[in-house]
Image 1 (cartoon, rainbow, N blue to C red):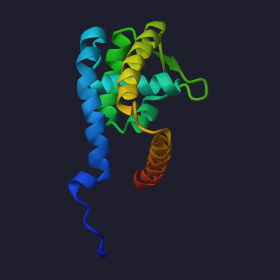
Image 2 (cartoon, helix red, strand yellow):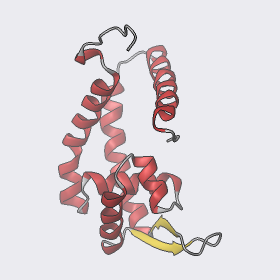
Image 3 (cartoon, rainbow, N blue to C red):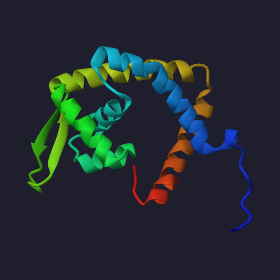
Length: 153
């Protein structure tokens, strides 16, 4: 192994990003659960489908970096709740296409609004040039990290 510099935990990308994401999720998840019956995993599935629909279950698993088993369970629950519908992919009739129902779109917007309020509060007061640099850097990191797992987000 080559002489790679040691990075202290508090300076690791994965630790810092996960810390911020986890704190936001822990703050909001109880509301998602009480108001909409959503778990963290079901919200992740719903968020990705709401943004990129229609998707197959495999595409959802890839975009959420979540095990296909847990994605499948979340999909079943979201269908049961009336938030998600399954359709047949016209290009490959063996594959399902997942999309939000009208109720699912309404809930998606409400949860997105909750998240946007929290993130706007977190970003308030940060100079625009800092935010521009931050988002450009995050984009570069996502692109480079995509190469680690062999798939793009």
